[in-house]
Amino acid sequence: MTPEIQRIREEYSRRDREIAPGHYSWKHSANYFMHVQCGRAVIRGLTRAGLFPLDGARVADIGCGTGVWLCEFLQWGAELRDLHGIELNESRLAVARRRLPGADLHEGDAQELPWRDRSLDIVTQFTVFTSVLDPEVKTRLAAEMWRVLRPGGAIVWYDFRVNNPSNASVRGIGVREIRKLFPHAIVHLASVTLLPPLTRRISWSAATALEVLPFLRTHYAGTLKKPFEA
Image 1: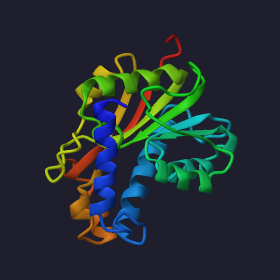
Image 2 (image 1 turned 90 degrees about the vertical axis):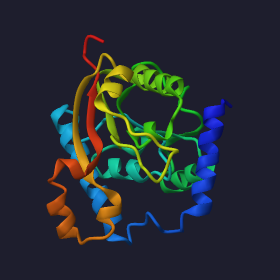
Image 3 (image 1 turned 135 degrees about the vertical axis):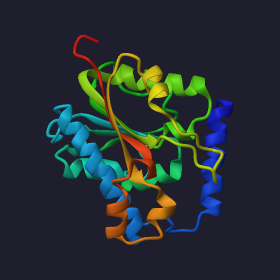
């Protein structure tokens, strides 16, 4: 295990200890608001890339956690047998396996993905890269995602574009760095997600109104498409 992977494991443990149970639960409307708005942005990106709905698509979620997004992909048309995932945290993966029996789910480090070259139509990552601080690990992770993606397929990207001043264990990623990580990708990204601390303090309607202001959005969402000739 590399020092960076050990650091990430320790950060998982710290969050489990220090963050109150249910803090990210959908019982809090702000959390569901952010999920829905992210989902809308991802669907727009996949539609632009000609990959929505997901009927017949082979999809892998990097850092799949408890399987939240894999469950969404089922609703978007994917078949259970076509869902794949990898997760570093064993307890989170155990939840995903209970939710998605029959899906291809792996515990491990995404620097070495278990799938064949060009075997997947869509590869997704939701706030994985900002949890990785080591540039070399980011580069290897990006290369592996690109390796398993077929020409004409797309990486779905959702991650912080700014730093979190209250958490030094994450680091925002701008468009320039994304293009450096995926130099051959056709990049379509948009700023999304109203500043989460603000979202948690206001109503759904107020959050909808304020999210139109670009300077209050904290994430990028969209697709990194692999050219057919790649």
